[in-house]
Amino acid sequence: MKRSAWTYVLAGLMVVAAPLHAASHAHADKKAEAKAATKPIPKEDAAISHGSVSVHGHAVHYTATAGHLLIRNDDGDATATVFYVAYTADGARAGTRPVTFLYNGGPGSSTIWLHMGSFGPVRVKTLNAKTIPAPPYTLEPNKNTLLDKTDLVFIDAIGTGFSHAVGKAKNKDFWGVDQDVDAFARFIRRYITVNQRWNSPKYLIGESYGTTRSAALSLHLQNMGIALNGITLVSSILNYGIDMPGSDMSYQLYLPSFAAIAWYHDKLPNKPADLAAFVQKVCHFADTEYANALAEGDNLPAAERDAIAQKLHQYTGLSVKYLKETDLRISIGRFRKQLLRDQAITMGRYDARYEGEDADSAGERPDYDPSDSAVSPAFIATFNQYLDHTLHYQHDKPYNVMASAIRHWDWKHSAPGGHGWKMPMPYVAGDLAQAMRENPSLHVFSANGWFDLATPFHATEYDLNHMTLPAKLHSQVHFAYYPSGHMIYLNPKALGELSADLDTFYDSTH
Image (tube, rainbow, N blue to C red):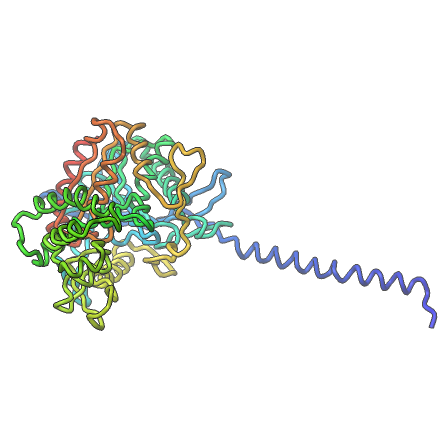
């Protein structure tokens, strides 16, 4: 059969049209996907409520603001909405009154712990080193609030609480050391702009990874023209490099915490009466004889190995046999399982005063952290009740206590003055040191729990004592120690001591 020329032309047009038709559909699909991926930009709104709390016998009347502020990139595009709760004293001159920004760490934790346990006007009633009984829980006025000294702004990191990415951004865009610091700096700048607080004395209080954030944030804010008066580091971690394979530094720096915990649990062969003096002695041993023995590695003579094992036994309560089996190197997980093994009891990581029971006593490490499970339900329940019934904050999504950020975290950190070089793991004491050199009025208060195995105090001492500061600036780094663990405020007595110390800190720094 013969075909006309038009038949071939039409056939060719159909062949060309098919991919064009498919391409148009693909383009439409991509536009739909892009539109779906662009999250709506919410308004900056807030719920306002009022309250009062008695501090040192005087009533402090305050306004509570639970709301959101937008942060934007350098092009002016909104990238995230950040949830915060601010407490501001009524009748005070906001322009010159101190304001403190507070946050927890994780990374990936909301700020529920500091908010409901430390310095706000109310707190969860806690029992010292004991599990908080099942509900109903008690929310009580906080006589140790800092509201008589400073306004307080509790901030939730992006992906936690009600904070989340907007527009074309994703939560993961903010999950990294430097990305997180930049986001917090943009929020603080936005807050002091909206609330006319540029001339207020400014402070940071961060806990755990929040101290990592604070140290780097101090320099980042400084570079934005925002100088700080003071930084409180609660249970610090400023160097993530000490646990790198091949390094023995962690064993050296963790030992004094092991000694304090063995002292608390009455496991020392000859328990001294004075904890602080005993710990100071152990710190000296850790930094001299023990560090030198670890440095010898496999070349350590047998007689010296025996002598070090005997001293470790005196300082930790662990048997000489076990210490030799560990090659004189005690990990945190092993210590938590081993010290009270004869009683079939494990110890908490955040606070080793808390005791737990595993399925069996033969394991290498504990099955869970009793210092976490002892308090988490009470904090979560009371905060949700408080959010609805006191702060009157309307929400249609659950408050996200923990995000999955740590599984996606970008740990690289730009070294200050490093000309673009990024450290594979963050060391931020250098950032803090540079901020202090550039701002000689900046003071640092380091709060430490004796029984904290998450961020042992001697590691903090080492980092803050190796910032190569001149003597005058080094004298502006203040240390304090409390009979508690990572969350110092869980012990009501320790919270009172910490609050009194911070009263003095604020009075002397503005």
